Amino acid sequence: MSRIQGDDKSVKSLLGQKFRIDYYQREYKWRSKQVRELIEDLTSRFLLDYLPTHERKTVSQYGQYFLGSVIISNKDGDRFIVDGQQRLTSLMLLLIYLDGLQKNRPDQQRVEITNLVYSTQFGSKSFNLDVQERNACLQALISGENPDPAEQPPSVQNLINRYNEITDIFPEDLRGDALPYFLDWLTEKVMLVEITAFSDDDAYTIFETMNDRGLSLTPTDMLKGYLLANITDDDNRAQASDSWKNQMAKLLDLGKDEDADCVKAWLRSQYADKIRERRAGAKPEDFDKLGTEFHRWVRENKSRVELSSSIKFTSFVTEDFCFYARAYSRARRAAETYTDGLTSVFFNAQNSFTLQYPLMLAPLRQEDDKNTVTRKMCLVAIFIEIMLARRIWNFKAIDHSTMQYRAFLVMKAIRRLDVDALAAELIRRLSPEGAGRDEYIDFETQEAFRLHGNNGPQVHRLLARLTEFAEVHSGQEPRYPEYAKRSAKKGGYQIEHIWADHPERFEDEFGHSADFAEYRNRIGGLVLLPGPDNASYSDMTFEEKVKHYAKQNLLAQSLHPIAYENKPGFRRFRDETGLPFSAKSSFKKADLDERQELYIALANRCWSVDRLKEV
Image 1 (tube, one colour):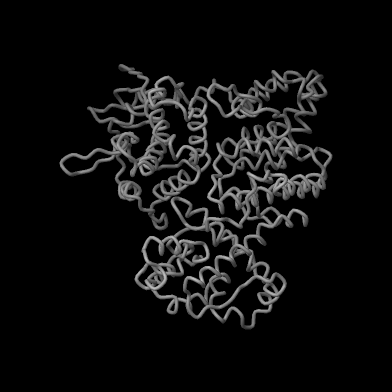
Image 2: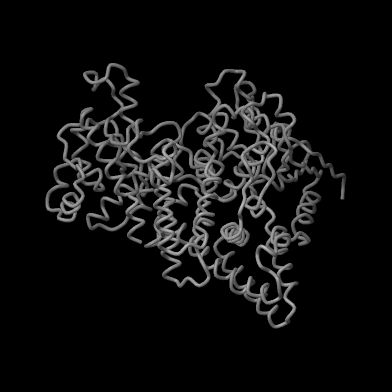
């Protein structure tokens, strides 16, 4: 083997270089899970040190974070990535998003990061990770555009989808004053090891050596070893081993790392009593340790887990683990496939609320029969959906770091409750008394809910849910997954503004175009339409486009008189609920106000606490 060079480098020093990627390695394959974990790991580590009272220079004293290794083959001065391009591509997407957040800030509040994504020479832009098929997409993202993934190559589709998820899940509390601190830390204190070989053969030998020797055990492997080693009876140990293997195989069928995710959710749901305080220097507690080193936590807390004998260790594997793993698997399948009775799980997953899994496991007890398990999981999922919808409607963050402490408190409060006590506790927590007068929120907001900033995906999902709710209660089939698919192409939907972007048409009602734009974005002025239809109607007046709405989903159709003809299911729904649906011959400011009130009333029905009483 020729000379090998290893250097520890910050994100700034590593990504400031030019890299090439061989054609057979150019696919970007990371899924939602990997991107979400990257964001959560980075932001959680940063928040261990950050305080709003700190000066910027204090970031130099923050702790480092190791992000892994990157293997490079240096071929005649060209640097080819052999291993690590998935991580580096995801970092590049994050940097593009963060640079967009800081664009309008004063120079002293900005961190120069564009040079970590691309450089410009003689008027020509070149990306630091050079993959030709991505460049047009990356340029669109840098320009603030939202390219449609449809009809793009699969790798570029994935790139766009992961970028959209970053805009959804990046913590709200780091988008404001904390942003330059986070960027300083990310670029200067997040470290990688760059391993450089000077031939492809040597580079791939290093890669295979690091990945194929099988010497590193996962926390799941180590937990299994500890549990089985404490079972003294040979038959019991064999039974526990088989049970563990079978259950792990089923979990891994759901996806990579689902085995570890299941164990984390299970142990957190039943045993986490403390969580790290949100202040610099606070130490990790049960909840935090179970997210990173659950094998060690179980060993150190065996008395709390009641692992006092060989029989206890056996039942911990064959009964406890298998029971909660089955429930977890069911929740994960419901998150991927719209499942009758657990549709809220799908909605919550679309909003990247991964904390729903330990919450749904928390009230379960091994003696619960299948129907009881279903009811408990359904209750918790509905509670979460109502909570998320209320927060989104009130422009409040739902990202992991914002919601983690709240979720932990709920998880502890509902642990092992019976169905009636669980429903009562969840209803209480959605009430003014249970939430606290200062914390309570609902859909009757002082500030009108509307499209703004980066909340487009959230607004789209709320509209999809409201549309489906009206249709299902009018006797039609559920279509939320169809409506929630965002695309300008066939098979996808987009948000349609009932008012075209022509403020001059409304000069009699709005003295300034900014006032018109704010009103136009209110949810009462929005519907969902298939992507191609949305594009073709966008410039029309209301009087021109309303006839096209007559052929669309019920919420759009309700603007046209045809929705009120020969539709007994819809008529019954209106009569029973008293919802103020009405056809419109024109759509002025007063009409949008009426429509806003309709959507608020519809939201109060769709996300009513009464749903918890009906489970």
